[in-house]
Amino acid sequence: MESQNNKRLTKAELEKMLIDNFVNLQRVLTNLSIKFDALSDNISKLLQLFELSAKSLAEKQGSEEGINFPPKDQELMNKLETLLDQNKTLAKGLTLIESKLRENNYPSDTGLNYPEG
Image (tube, rainbow, N blue to C red; front, top):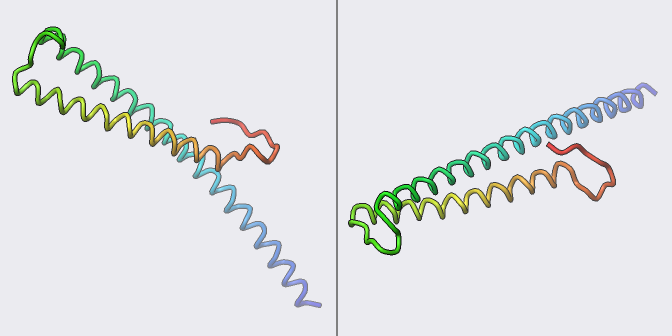
């Protein structure tokens, strides 16, 4: 009889530990999702800054179509263009990761309504 009571107590403790771990995991995943969202926003802002810099440099040198840039400036423009493309790719990737984390945190097929954020 005492053996069964120990098993029940152990089972209850195990269930409580599993629930606590699940809640903690949800907190961590939510925090990670928020941080990815902030990182994605920061990368978007950085991308806008690079775009403004490229436009400013192009305007400073004249029309993009009519004037050939000096080799040093052309090299800088090429590097900025490459950096812009890389940042766009990173921003898209981070957005996809963040959306996947949201899907895993708040699956829509359970019928439950979870808060966004």
